[in-house]
Image (tube, rainbow, N blue to C red; front, side, top):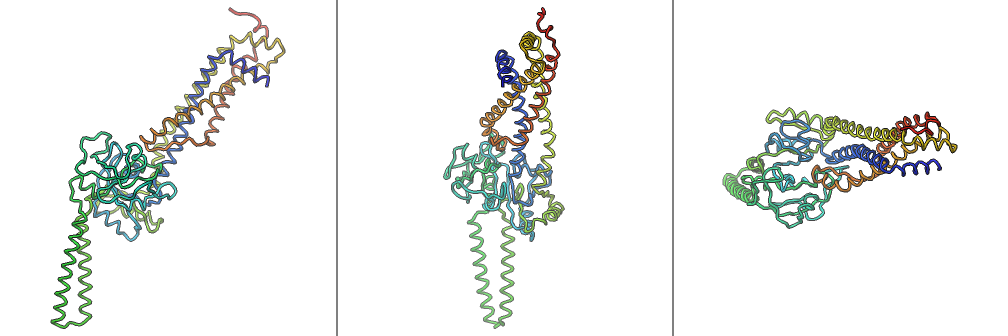
Length: 459
């Protein structure tokens, strides 16, 4: 305890040097821990972005690029997937559900995702968590759904009007103001890129870009025409049967044939007039997850159109392997910054030894042994480092509080305060141990100084 009070008194007598040393170590520790924390939370955030989707299918491109633009809304697709191809795989016996998405538009920098309303039923994030509405409901015709961050930042609520702009930039020179949308719902916060997205219908996107949209009235008229045609045909068939007195089996055969013909005719009409000619990608959920590898191979070798199918989990691992070099580089840079801070502390202690020789000699004269002198200098260095670590942690938490909203808005990454992780405790322990080792150098020199050298003045 006496040694601690003596070290504190000695440091207070050299406030300027002590404060500079503490500040240098604090900045180093903040960078060292900050790189680790951002890396871990970014990795966790990416892993929680999508769950329960077995395959993501898009035009032929790199797997990481497909994952980035379809899930994280970063970048652009190389080409579109035709609606006929989407229908082909959506009706595949192994496919349980599929969700088409089309990208390319935005609202004040927030990406617009055109899809179908059942997107909100099948999309999962984190550990199979479903999307939930904070208010309102899924979109209908000429309606839109907002992510939580979009609604908060743009100040929009259910019933507000929204105008979509062409392109993905924050500044657009062409807006689809001839086709405004009404907000029908706002999603709960998820901590994923869903929070920064705006969801609209595929038909609305097609109309905005000059398509026909294949609206509900045309569907209704088409069905009514077919119904009238079928009714007339049945009436003629009935009269023909009455006149020629055909048997019951022949009537049943013709009725089945007419039903199959009408079904094929309706399917052909639906394929001729899709909600949109092409989509950017589509998400797939399979009947059996172990069949994902075989389904992926079938899609990748599809002859009618060049496609790429990826499994989100394995592609995320590939993405992190790509980014591991940047993580390592950041860790090395922060390590060198820490080393610079510790070397600065060593230089300060060595520079102060010459000025403190008389102080050491006085301590030796009043009974302090060489071990006490050694322990005094080591304890000063460790004490400075401990304060620097505490200040560094405080700076890190302060920066997280200040910059977390901006990081989430700009990059879609949620950085939370949380508690200090075991890895962070380990890094702080390494810093403390390094300061102890470095402080042994000036402590050993002080230990070797003789009493006569300390009592004689040198000019």
